[in-house]
Length: 116
Image 1 (cartoon, helix red, strand yellow):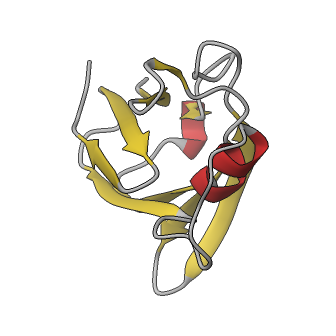
Image 2: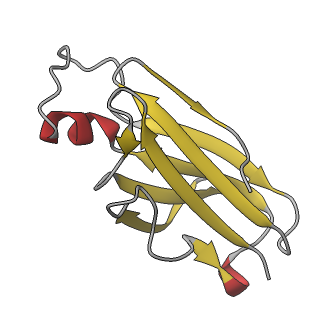
């Protein structure tokens, strides 16, 4: 069976994004919250975000609370913050594959890609 993982890197500080809250939603006509958590000291989760029978083809969103992360790390943000919650919408086509969704983020920009 496949799985979903993530990794957050704070590109403004050159370190892992530790303690960033995230929430995973499935989009099936409405936003269905599946799970939530926070990244560890390495900017990752201790295990897959989604795996087993819950890991199914479909459209998903990962919401990352980056504004709170930057505030907790004493980064001066505008009010309102330019980026407060980063939302990454992505699709899972094959439930037998590993989908890795990294987030590279700073207070004023981010990027993502399908990792390995």
